[in-house]
Amino acid sequence: MNPYYTDYSEFLGRLFPGVKVQKLSVDGGFTCPNRDGTLSRGGCLYCDNRSFSPEYTRSTPDIAAQIAAGRRFFGRKYPEMRYLAYFQTHTNTYAPVEELRRLYLEALAQPDVVGLIVSTRPDCVGEEVTGLLSELSRQTVVIVELGAETSHDATLSRINRHHTWHDVTDAVARLHAAGLHIGLHLIFGLPGEREEDMLETVRRAAALPVDTLKLHQLQIIRGTALAAQWAGGTDDTLPFTAEEYLRLCAEVVKLVPRRVAIERFVSQSPPDLLLHPRWNLKNYEFSNRLLRILQEQSR
Image (cartoon, rainbow, N blue to C red; front, side):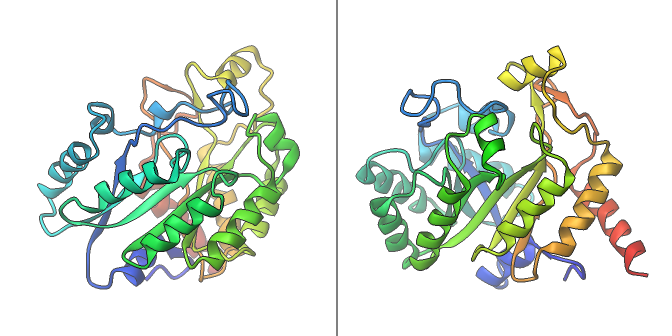
C-alpha cells in the first residue's frame, strides 16, 4: 500500500480482490457536442484524441476486434489478466441510449472483460444515460469518468469547454445517487491558471463523492488551437519544469483524502504530436520521484 495516497491499483484491488485488471481502450465511434456543432465546432482548445488513443483502436471500428487486439497485446505477458473496456475517445455517452446499450453490451460480452469505464462530459449524462449505466452497474463494475478539467468557469470558457463547474457537481450528485463509481479528470497548467487555482480545483473536487482523480499536466499538441497560441506566444499557460510539477503534485497529495484514489499525475503523448513539455519521464519514473519527495517532506 502506498503510504501517502491511494493509488489506482489499490482502488482496483478493492473492486476486484485478487484479480489483476487492466484497462483496454475502446473507440465506439462517438463524436462530441463540442465538435459537431451542437455546442461548438472547434472542440476544446488543447484536444486531439490521437494523442491518447492506442493504435489498435484506430485500425477497426469493430468493438470486438479492438478488444481482441488489446487482449493479445497484454495477454502475452499476463495471461491471467482481466480487462475493463474503456470507452475513451470523444464523448462516450453522446448517442441514443439504445445505441449506447448495444455498444456497452458488446464490449461486456467479450472474453475476460469484467467491467466498463465510460469517459464523457458532465453535461452528457442525462436521466436516460444515468439510468442505463445504473442498470449495467447491477451486473458489472461501471466507472464513469467525467472530464471536469478545472473548477474555474472563466478557464472553462477560455478553453472552449462549453460546460460549467455546476455541470460537474450536478452530474456527480446524480451519478452518485445512482450508485455508480465516479472519476474526475483534471488538467494542471491551463491558460490563465496559477498553482493556487489548481490546488483550489483539487480541494473542490476532493470534497465531492468521487472515487478517483485522474490528473495530468497540460500538453501542447501539434495542430491544436492551443498549439497555434503557444507558437505565437499568446497561450498564457504555466510552463512547468518537471521538478516544479513534482512539487505541485506533492501539495496535491496532501489535499486528497485516502477515500479518493489518484489514478495518475502525468500523461505522455506520442513524440510526433507533442510540442511541450518534453520531460521524457515515464509514469512510473515520475511516481518514484514523487514518492522520494513525499518521503523527504515527511521526515
